[in-house]
Image (cartoon, rainbow, N blue to C red; front, side):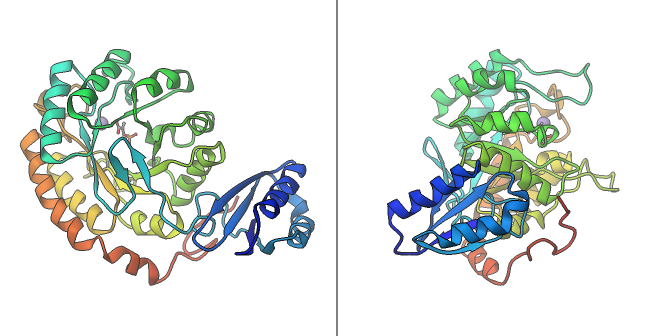
Length: 360
Ligand code: PEP
Ligand code: MN
């Protein structure tokens, strides 16, 4: 439930509400919106719901208490109406600018990473990606250079000034990855690894959460909720394709997830057409599509010699292809960037329903 404070509520009244919630063994999360403070009540409320709503409604400074019709709270627009903007070094994510994360699937060597980093930076990338610990379908495939790759990534950050994003696969890698990375990536295969989600939720670095290939939009938001509820507000989401009956592409990029997510949540939404399609030539049209439907950014894999790549050879772009992609998406972003507020005003996804939102 949300406790909506009166616009005139004092600090002491807000504290009074929070301490009542704490006394119930629940956790209050306050958000100061443009007009008023909203306090979300997080935890297992169970059968206390109506008595608690009544008690909170009586407290001084409270305008109303609203039950939550969605299973996610902190991720919802009802709690936090304005877009979340995440600052990472000089890069702003979710502020209306176009974020472009580019770099190799896997860091393979210092030279390979530096050549890619210099080139994607020159073409306009805003964040450098590179896998150090790789989640591979086969245990016999290249598993990444690990800590050596993290060192190359931080050297590439010094060299280019670009913040770096890399995947953390397990909680016991978290400290070392966070020592080097600017953004922690949770991969599709780990989207519902709740202990990992809680662990990144306790970190101060921003997190990019990728949608599991078998996960609904609501499950993605529930996974984000774990990170938010553990205390990390800087979460961005990434649509990277879901598994459907279609086999021509590696996955099916769910373009509708972008406006649906923007309607449901304040968190920035990116798309990853590389993993979604699995095919180099499809990355440009799907990037154009993602930007056109309002994504806050794209993540694409780029390699100086993709055919020789140690992972995802078929989908990585060459350096000139990436430059060409940038030339295509920047004008699209310019064209559509003011449209999305209007589109959101058309309406929003109805609560608990609207097509297959599941029960909890
Ligand atoms: C990646 O971005 O390196 C990756 C493995 O992607 P995903 O988790 O979406 O498969
Ligand atoms: Mn990859």
